[in-house]
Length: 117
Image (cartoon, rainbow, N blue to C red; front, side):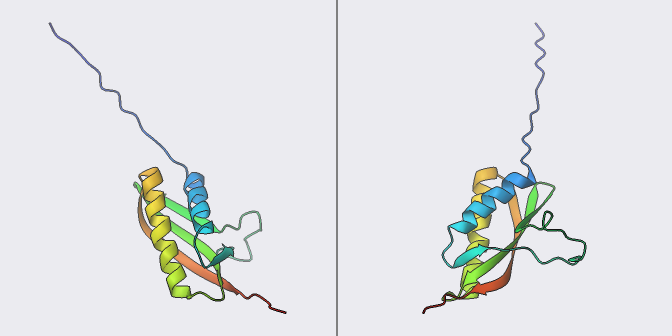
């Protein structure tokens, strides 16, 4: 008796927007990050506020590159905060989606100073 079983291949597609939301939520929990900011753009004249983003995801061949813009709190070391953002975002995105993260680029666009009066 010849049994012919067809193998069904399935795929899972996770959008860049979902990865971006995961990264944004992770960043909010990191000590020393005051807020997200707008990524610097090479073409700032052409960028409108509706297009400006805090987190940019580039998915290519099952790997992601993530660009993030943040404002750091004054009383924290910028290098330490950036390293924590890189490690935490990479780990959480990989754990939640299964997508390998090749790079997490962090752009510090400002420092938040608390006025004590």
